[in-house]
Amino acid sequence: MKSRQTGIVMRTLYLCALVLSLSGPARAAEPDWPASISLATAAPGGTYHAYGAELAKILRRELGISVAEQLSEGPAENIQLIQSGAVQLGFVTMGAALQGWNGSGAWTKGRQLRAIRALFPMYDTPFTFAVLKDSGIRTLADMAGKRIGVGPRGGTAGDYLPKFLTVLNIDAQLVFASYEDLSAQLQAGKIDLLAAAAGAPFPALAALDAKKLVRFIGLGRNEILALRLAMPELTAATVPAGAYPSLLRDYATVGLFNFAVASADLPDSLVFDIVAAVFAHRDELIRAHPAAAETIPANFSRNTFLPYHRGANRYYSNSMARDIVQGD
Image (cartoon, rainbow, N blue to C red; front, side):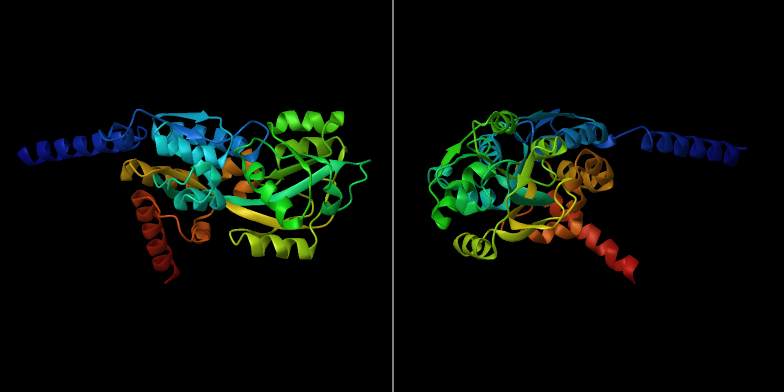
């Protein structure tokens, strides 16, 4: 009798434990987790915003805490927001991360901004140039004397286009604004060319291309070489044919890889669960934006200098060990 009662008690305890394990994200009850976190992305009309809105939704559901998207001017401001403690997560290009880490970008004012830690790879950022179909601009050299929309002042294109023009010895007028605004300005003839640095298809360009309003201006081999020699953080990049309906051939350009970063102060267990949630629900990110197809653990090697958060390190260590075991 006593043995039977003991068995009943044990089964009851087991069922209680099973119910608790299936009842949602238990991690949220951990005392060192914040009740809410903020994710710095970029202005509407860009890839960061589309990717970030979906990521915030995934994390809210999977972590059981409040995750708010904060719009910004892009990578440089995102790094500054994390440095100040205003947000806990953000998106950056590796170029901006390198400038912030070393304090070499003009926007850092000589300060080394080292509160950020790498979380996971996102996607490559190709630089893409587009004009209205009836424009006389055929090459980058034709940009001389023209008005170029480059996105927000703190965004990737806004940061790099002045350097591009210097390297290529082109004198042009840069126009800073959100891509939604610049798209309207291009259609109205207020700017001559739109320069974007974002995962393809870039929403603002995709909307214009869907209306059959634009054509793309490619970079020549010598221009790509000159830019990469001047800025070693740039990599060779390709926008594949079909990324935009009117793009019938691969578009050769230069690019920067994007990473999600976090404050070094976030709890390790929270960061581990963030990274795990991203890779487990990557299909949802891809539906939000096709660029997320490059959000895979293997691309963690695209970061060559920025320290990974301890929680992210634990995830990749476990993941690689699991792959080795399964490979055996």
